[in-house]
Image (cartoon, rainbow over all chains, first blue to last red; front, side, top):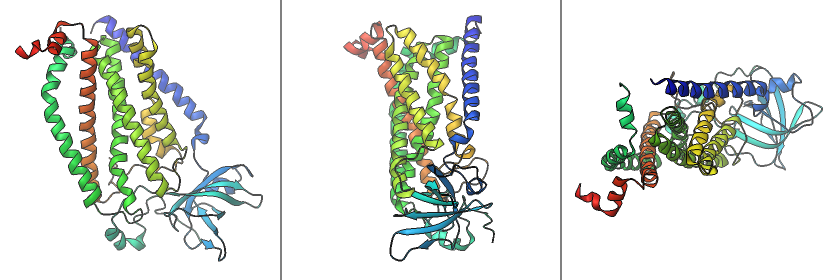
Length: 154
Length: 250
């Protein structure tokens, strides 16, 4: 290769390496802030700010969803296997919100450690199954990749 | 001496003539893959157990997203070749790749938002995947804009090639964002190291669509580059002959 072209090649490699390094350091510095939500264990251990708009995310604990009879209020527990967080919400839940599925809630943590949500989003997992196939694996949780293998504790 | 073949490859005229021969075949393959893939995916693939029919947007969303990421490398590598070998054709291809890539990125973002509304419950969330994807759209648009930002065409293409190279760091970040951080966007469905978490009856039309969009990308890239070749080489004899019809005697 011609020496001038070799020099230009070095220049190109330098740009790519240098920008990767710069962005890598930036991402490292911002690593916590890039997360969309806090897992329940970090909120329970006090790492999340109180009374500030934050998001929390985890799997909705099966059997924990309680709906009020006379309003749209709903309360449920989200868990990451290590800790559980009580969430209260009033409004319409997304269609894909379900027990044993992942959800992301947006709102404030009150002084009692209860999360007052103003928005509930369903986090879809990466599995796609036709309903006939899903019926046969219904009770084995095989189709729940995000919440799969999660130990819900007692 | 050994690099001579490479320089011949970079001749705009050679590219224009060769690509004219490939285009009809490539267009036919593209149309076939896209028609088969979309009819298969939209009409014959079974509905998803949880999402129902709304999951079918994956047949457009995922192929466009995958190809917009791969297309970024096409743009950056063309830019690097242009910088190193001062090859005009590489710069022309970089410009075309920026236009096609920006369109695909926009399509991926738009279909993702449409899918997010019934699935997540919101059109848009600023999680790592979506935010870095928007950053890529702006990198594509930046490369297009920089081409026009300088009086000197030579300076403009060099500057945009450098921008394209700097942006390459974003591509692995987009790809790994769902694994590195907590995001609302789900992790990858098609996995290279383990079994994909999509039923084969849904996977095959998806793979057909991915192949189809790759071909569509190639066709669009060639068409844009051909137009760019004619634009840039309009003062050369062969283009003038081609346009005035004298070329028909060839």
